[in-house]
Image 1: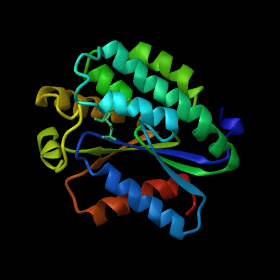
Image 2 (image 1 turned 90 degrees about the horizontal axis):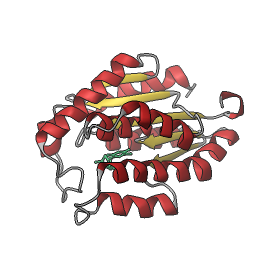
Image 3 (image 1 turned 90 degrees about the vertical axis):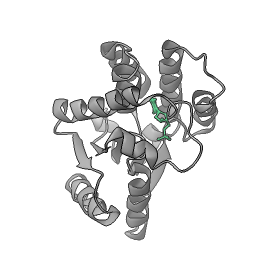
Length: 209
Ligand code: TMP
């Protein structure tokens, strides 16, 4: 995989209300101003079919979705965006900033719902064709505090109870311990400017801005 990848793949992760979407937008603007070839994507979504799957996954009316179905729908959305957009862009040399990726499934469906994590990683390797991010930034925040920051109507996953969201946070912290070279945990309880400085320090170590 590495041989055909000329660009950089950077993923932003975190529990609800962690501020990751604000930071990814700030980084996107910053790199665009520096005239870097950069695109911002989100998961689930980013391409037409994956956006359709996103609507099924987040619809509050779809209460009966099983954890097995949920896991495979996230994976299906990922398979499509990887093949249709991420791999071709990386071959061209684009810097891809992606709001969530496979780590979200490990944490939300694995640690959160109890789906077998080895299974998630096996299916993950199939749908990503072995692609791993060069850098993953995880924005860490107390689950209750994060949820209280969401001003709009909550989606199907956000509506889950606090013990679920605590497991998600613990899962992310565990990923930081398991993969210290790729995964960097950032304390979200700081000003957005301070967080942005930390974020750009990590990104500058991976790409020359
Ligand atoms: P977002 O709110 O960051 O756009 O993400 C959509 C929701 O989907 C969020 O609650 C996290 C959840 N999610 C999973 O449960 N598993 C996944 O694999 C992904 C990508 C997202």
